[in-house]
Length: 450
Image (cartoon, rainbow, N blue to C red; front, top):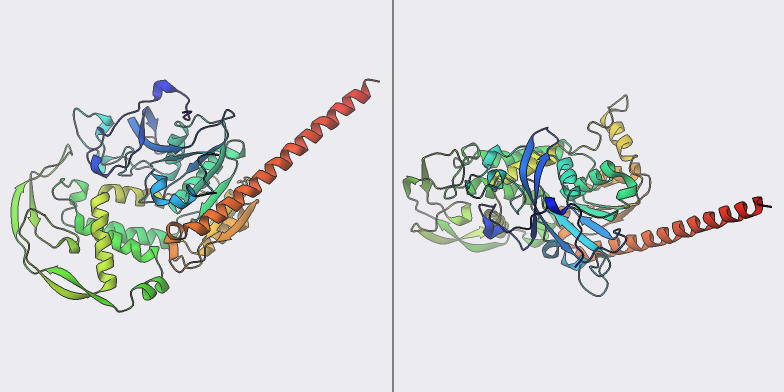
């Protein structure tokens, strides 16, 4: 098996010992980077990077495709984009490409984050918690590069937050290394609307009394706050039409807590600094918080189907994510602006600076938008299309809003497959032109010898 590889002394294939909640981790590989300096100037030591790969790197080292995941995604691409990787003729064919996905810093899914032990010290078992330093979208590109031993990337693909990362790949490393881009339901900057949506979610978490500025225990996580944040996010991931069509005013029977108990007991957690006592309140898990060890008194009552849908997903999110990690990644997304430290606004304002930054991207680019997306409206993709010189625009037809990139995967597979086909034609034409120029030069040299 030919793994992407470069400096093996900086590699440490490990398990999950660096992580305080290993049960939420997918099957993946790990690398330890001894030292990594963030964009902020702060240095992390023994940085763990979780990643997956599918397919083999060819002898030329130029068939790698990097996939950048979204906010709550992980490196297990096959779990969230199976259609693009399987079937008779998938766009991301592991028999043709070496497909690599790395988990971003700050995520709960394996890379260094608030949930991992400081400096990966498994003996001390002290989690970073809220002291984990702030990271940016650009940090995720810079540290990812250390993992790859390829000579050039066939393509970098990213949906939503992943599209922000893909843009930075192109801008930081240029067309000699990154040969093409696919940007799905994303934007050139995190605008006021997206920042406001993120602040709504952060505030939901911080309003939970169990949050304690991020120093919460394992037993008393801010589940109500995280569930509320997830429910708020779901409202931006879908659309008016999708909710009306799916739920309307339909109701269903659902359990509701009618009694609660309170007790005080020692906190248990992995943080080096934490409260010594916590208070637990028995609330129905459907309301985002609870303790399975306590007796529950519930009664079935009719609720709107859309209510039970939101509460279900809030609870489900608590089982697989972490509040500190969520706040961290929301903050990371808000740093996104392709013009930052690249193009200073002039008389044309912020839009002009964005346009000049995007004009630096020379790679063939597929931009994909969803007309029903209210989080990153199609106007955002129009900005990318109009300012990146060598771009085609694709559209996913769906009522499901932003989440269409996860739902309408057959449409996306077709768009990416067609784009890759055009890339192959361009590469053949470029090779033919190179050969022609080489032959012409040889003829000239031959003629000049007489």
